[in-house]
Length: 175
Image (tube, rainbow, N blue to C red; front, side, top):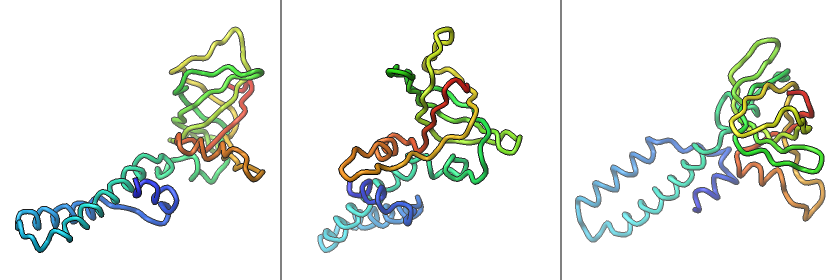
């Protein structure tokens, strides 16, 4: 758990590679096979280090913003994007909340592969019910979710990051 927490707060500076874990594991196995009492403290340090690194690697592979095609790394303005609704839409008072998994985007008139998730709000259209698994073509560019503006306010952007969502957009009827 400590590895997961450390990567969450310091992960952008650190990058854990598989070969580092493999080296520690081979070293650990070599010392275990020796079965010597004098290596017990080193074995425990190696075991805890491997668990720490596995936690960091787990979050590193889970976070979608590490992908080079992620929306966060897109420098040009997105004209439109194609996505799939990944959760059942939630009706609100004047809108419908959608979680959209982006598949590709139109940038400078050209469709490029893009990844990421968007927390979107659409105007309800009675003749077009939206559901889980529906593919949408959305006009416009999603915005990075803004952090709370007041101290002590609920951090909705942080909550969305825990769900691998970094963008939001009010799409209205532009889909």
